[in-house]
Length: 186
Image (tube, rainbow, N blue to C red; front, side, top):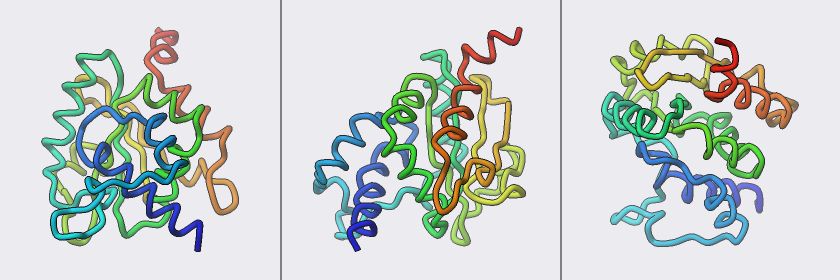
């Protein structure tokens, strides 16, 4: 039960930043989650819990805003595509938030957004723009350069370990897609 409550708090704390194209401050969010700080901003005016993936957001605009931030900061964009219906999507979000080393790496090198795919909103135009990543299952990670070109689509099942994710595999994945790692290939 504690794990379920903890996961719910992670989702509530993470969405206000991740549902939009703002730069995610994973280190700060992880500290809030550890302290179990929950505020009124984690609940809609109707009293509903905020969801990690916003089914109402225009994903094309969300991606464009993230690309603007990427151009300004010299970082790449990572789109975690999935939905609130997907337990592995929520598990991955919790995993990267809970791990300080990974959270710090993401915060420094990427503009990280959650792009919704659900029965209610398939975001078909955005899925085409991202190279139809759902063919790999969910969650799926799409890396975009600052011009919006798809650099890589990552099947997240390759990052799994037992009923969670592998610290080493996830860390290696993010380290291998930083601007510095890519620029060293040129």
